Image (tube, rainbow over all chains, first blue to last red; front, top):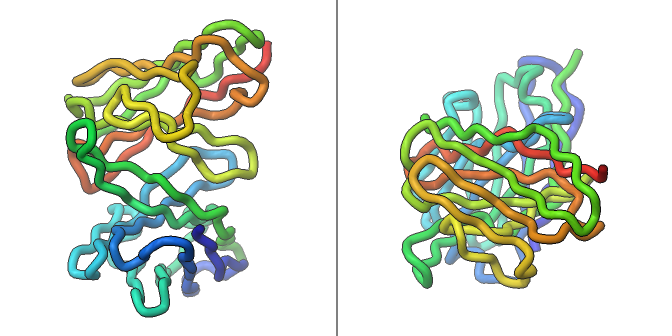
Length: 122
Length: 108
């Protein structure tokens, strides 16, 4: 399972670090992502990190402000969020990204956490 | 960036009826498309990947079709537990990974 933590109320311009604790699978073998969902809105991909932490990607909306990282020894995924804006207010999910070649070449999110709420407001 | 457009935004269906949800990509994504179901207060759940392959444990009443830019998710006979929001997502050309805005399936 995946369990997020670290969400909180923070002022605009502030920082926050989210964590995602993984259990029940070999965390070090999987790529991971953060996906967010603003209140009443749809899903927005935020960031990706591969299993070895040598490839990271970011949505343009967070590039330069957020940093994804992981600690395979601790089975944990992180998202450092700086220069937070009101539009970053959302539930943040960590999600496992799986490659499946059983029926073609496919990638998908097969395991999600329950999310942690980040509210950016003064 | 590939833009995913879902229609309709809301679909009102009676239990037992068929529901047809559409997803269109702004450029071809081949068959690199997934569908997710999300219920209130819950995380999304994978339904379909590769445009038409059901994920493990997904009932046969869910089916996906399409390729290129036009995709469909069909729920053949809606059960009470199927009323939810459904999202399509492309993974053919990323980053970024992109989702549609969702279709809410509600009880008629």
